[in-house]
Length: 117
Image (tube, rainbow, N blue to C red; front, side, top):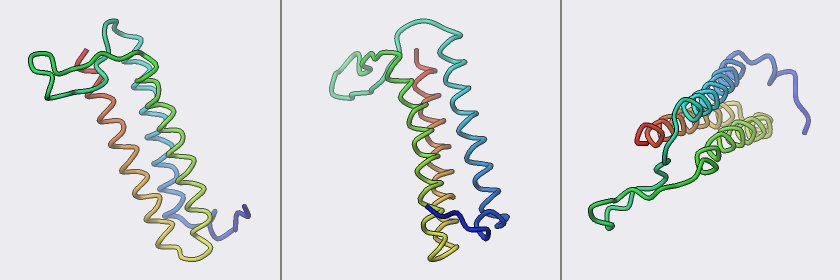
């Protein structure tokens, strides 16, 4: 994978990469801090067909999977944007922008699951 100088000197690309890395680190830190601050059962799924108790319990590993997901999303979006940038700049910006949205949604969902416990 050849990294061109144009990619590294594009301001919008660098801003999006910085935002993605910041949200990835922020999301990982928030998940780890929320896990270490309290104990109890982690609710990992909501099943409306279960009746009185629609939440199913999970393990800590299930929530730690969100951190791995954040890292994978950051890495894959960076690699995809580098490869697509050679063909069209706007596609690379779109990939990074959608990655930012996905990282942000992951933070929201993991926080919602951790608040329920």
